[in-house]
Structures are given as structure tokens and as C-alpha cells.
Image (cartoon, one colour):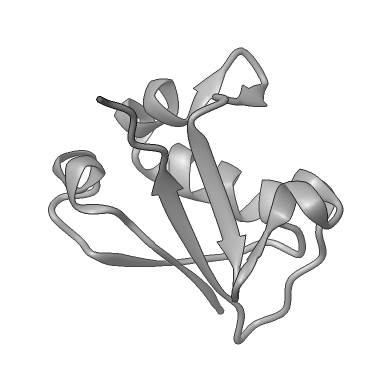
Amino acid sequence: MASIKIPTPLRAFTENQAQVVVSGGTVGAALDDLTQRFPELRQHLYEGDKLRNFVNVFLGEEDVRFLDGLETEIDADTNLRIIPSIAGG
């Protein structure tokens, strides 16, 4: 099954798990599985049904926004990473 690496600030919503095994054939389905299992996480990733602007999901070294977005197909050995944008100055 695919897995999603959870960034440190969001681990409080995944029972402190750094990586969560998920099911689904697309990035969106994998994220849906993740947020169904950890409902409090959804508000930090989504605004309505779209990923928040500051949430980046990577498949390998590629931001899925530059692939097929949430429709990007994944397979059982896929490793996804959630990387929140950091702003400051």
C-alpha cells in the first residue's frame, strides 16, 4: 500500500505518526483515506474540496500540481510527502 509522510507540525493530528500507510489509486483517494482515518487533519489540508494553497503534495521529487493534481495515479509502493509552505521574512 502507498504511504504518506506527515510533516512534524501535522503529526499531532495523526497520533504522532511520521508516516501513514493509505489506500487509493490516486493522490486524492490516498488523501481521502488519510483524512477519513484522521478527520481533524482535513481542515489543515483542505479548504472545501480543494487542497489549501500552502499545502504541497509531492510524489517523489514532483509536486503533484505539475502532474495531474489530485488525479495523479499512484501504485502500491508510492511514497507521497505533504510539505506545508513556509512564509516569513
